[in-house]
Length: 95
Image 1 (cartoon, rainbow, N blue to C red):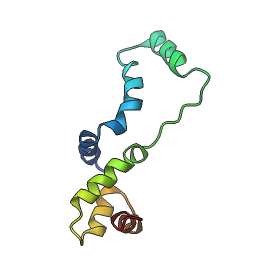
Image 2 (image 1 turned 90 degrees about the vertical axis):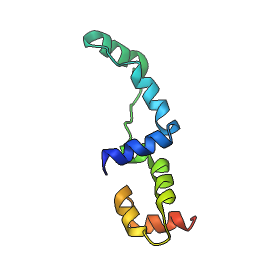
Image 3 (image 1 turned 180 degrees about the horizontal axis):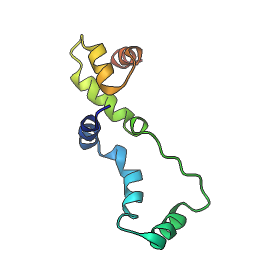
Image 4 (image 1 turned 45 degrees about the vertical axis):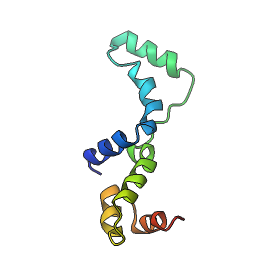
């Protein structure tokens, strides 16, 4: 999936990225021990799951695909947004 598609979805649906982004922004600019210490402080003793881009933006990408749907372009949108044709049809049909 193209980076520009993800960026476009993020701009239209910023709430999808705020939670993980806010935490990580606190680490920006830190180096060496300060960076490691901040990671320990924020995540120490926990398992950290880093979701895929597609997982984070799934709802945003689905909204974008629906916005572009013209009644006939199931396959093109499925390919563009990384969905299966079956998922795109389910999405459009509301189920």
